[in-house]
Image (cartoon, rainbow over all chains, first blue to last red; front, top):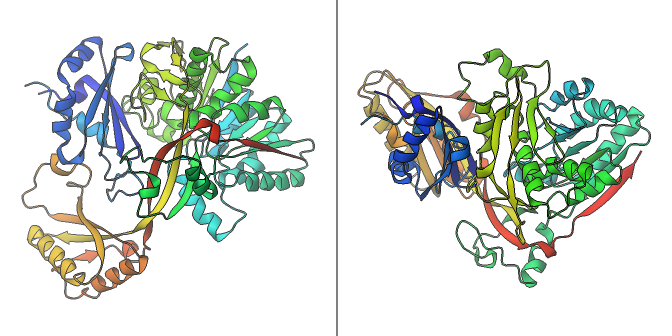
Length: 102
Length: 453
């Protein structure tokens, strides 16, 4: 079984209570696959309770990457959050844990 | 002839001495230091309340004593937003250090005008509502008015002016991070303030530079198998070679550890970016979706094709507000019956705090669900649990009492429980709430003060 990590890498960061997660394809083929199947709804469902608000997807064909902007993802933001990772540094990694082949 | 811009700081506490190999090796024409995260200013407010001459980042002491003498001798200007809440105080500190170091003729510029905390009432009277971008609430309607910082994100203009006036070191407060880096490009090439594509390209260069290690192999998932972990402690920080048309090559300090590849550049390109077709800065709105990245030799990535759009009519304001205190305790529970012991611990804490005004209590199981909550797989019967308890209250005293009450159960606790000594001895930490809003550009008037040695 493959995971999204086999097709992509990425990085996450914070701005207030919004986290963004980039998913950068390892190959052009992988990008087409990810672009077709990794919808905002699917990402929102994957994170579950971690992300309270909307997830918006942006496409960057030029660098074969998707950018997910996740509202209400940081327990109030870095300065209020009680999480052990208040900046959401680990959020990109866990998305790549997603099982890819149905 | 390209303009070579080095970046030697990405946060308060970064190793600013990475500027030295850039300068001593003759690899840069200018070095920028980006010191302010969203919460740094609030930290600096605490320093300033204790001592009014402070309020700037201590890293500037290192820059003044260890980097400035070499940079000044080689006519390499330095730009830092580490002035924080007190750019004038920082400039005075630098002047005193420069006198002792005999840096005759040094010109220091301090940019002020971003700090609007004292004028919030006047600005509201003049029609500014400071609507919270997250909640839609106006500032006047906020129940909690305990604001300790209010700073506008300034653009590149005052830095450009200071450079043109021959400043050797420029200290600002809250300037938008990438604007520190685009300022020397504007000063050097004379780009017009409505040359949107060039300004946008310069901002992208600044965006890639401003997190130092993150574009040369740090925090890189793509390169996890390709970088010698020992190198992470000594990464050579990034340098951009900017051409007159705004396109640039991102590289790093030669003969130092680290790597620049398409992967490291792509990872950093989207870092803390939201809509990539309109990344807003005070000077230009940037479209990241037209740019092209090409490997241009070892540790060199060329970026071209960036497009820009007119700057917004408003500037972003970031305010920090005191919202109470938080405290952490860490307990360990071991085999057998760890889940039963966890239930005991929670009940014991609940009972102990029944009459205390605690606002929030969160239990996190380190190594099990603390990072990813419900995504984590259930564990049947672990040998150990490390339980992190986070709790908040309006007043620090409440949290101190809460800790005393829990510790008083030290001999009446779940069997085999232990508590981390360093967390027991800790202090309540301030919770700072961020309030982000916008302000009309014409309400803000940056000012430059020059000090000469």
